[in-house]
Length: 323
Image (cartoon, rainbow, N blue to C red; front, side, top):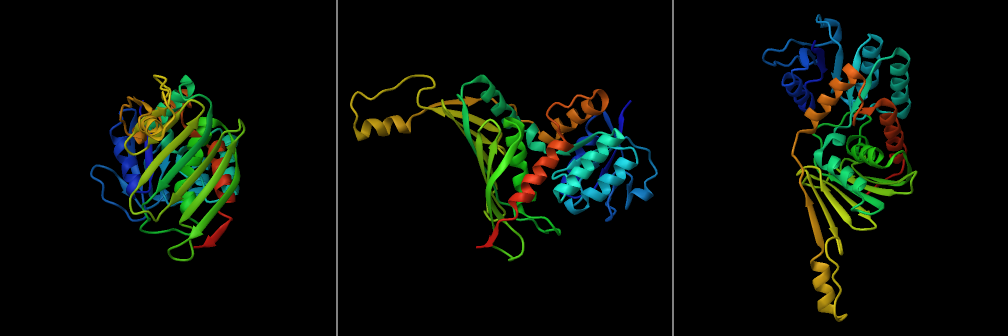
């Protein structure tokens, strides 16, 4: 039996969900709901849930964040399983309400924190588990570039971008708390478009997240400092490298002079890990099928974890100044 699926929202991300569902034999796309009534070959499209005639099992929701709470609650009450795009909701209160309703009704509610399925992030998790990095000390995330063409009410760079890295840090290091944050309004004087967030996990590992809509080039990277080296991850290129002074061979200068030190610093040991490039959205959909059919969560982000991320983002948005 295939999983009958409806995609809500046919914007850029919604159309990617439509494509991945259509190419996965475990799912059957029975409809798309979007007020703009898009034309998608071979797919029944309607303007609202009320107009939808087909029965379905799961809803994939890719509408503006401001509508996540109302539509998510409606779908859960209708007895549907739901995959909501990140962030789970606009506020921590709304996010908790969605998580609680899903739990009370026994419905499955997952959240599209798709970077969990990025093969480079999965490789980083393997490197950390292997011990090659030593003990992780600090994560530094950079996610910049790509000013949105439209900004819906209540959205900003923290809810739009920083939540990705808050979730990745949580998935790798466990529950965390906000230590400090600073956001800036630099473009239209109303919406924070630049943010720096400092986090601390229960294990003591810390993280800083720098994110903005301003940088003209998209950069999506992680740098992890450990006691045995530094690991560099590129989300976009899906690469993972470990750098260290003595990972493979121990080099010590015969004489402590500037040129000897410069040679050592310019030639650290590097391990370039093989990463099989795959589309994270496809991998997430595969796990969603396993979750619905066999209750296998895998790397999926569930509602409680996503609600905690929204709570951190909400707190981080409060410290804003005009640049």
